[in-house]
Image (cartoon, rainbow, N blue to C red; front, side, top):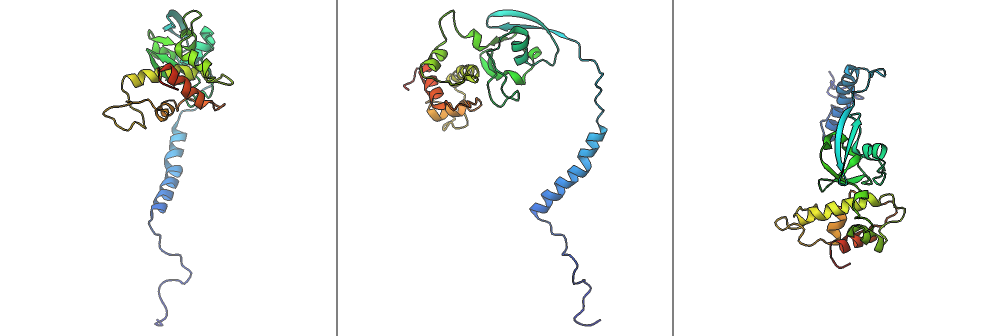
Length: 224
């Protein structure tokens, strides 16, 4: 063999080099080519003729009143409120728990009603926007939203108000947020930054956020 010849073809590709990128790429490709197809093909086909599950009885304590409902067990709390009890104040915005328009209070704690099933809350106390006022007297948070013009189109307002009430309760109980500086004394001061972070799960497409913060501060007895 000539001293200038070698066993490697001149046009042969370089040896496969293991890098972070190749690991990610090959790992992802392997997942797509092996695991996912097997999982898809192993799944039972959907039977459109399969009967729905039998209905269940649910007792909900909503705004101080007891309601006995017979529901498909797959019914969300939001649909139970809107479609079965005509309590349409809680809005269906995204129906994926991302906008907060459906926020209600369960035993005083805020929750996205589109992400939970009605049967889960059998016997529990549910407060919606319709249950906050006492007769003609608005809840202090409702009054603050009106006085500070904390809404424009109003679609998110019921969720904003319920969430704000729940948020203030959490703060008073000492629950910290992502931006709380000292976890040994959480939320010592409910600053604008704290309020915005704690209310970040409620989206206002009209962008009335400064007014909403001012309304919450008034309802909390803070200077605005």
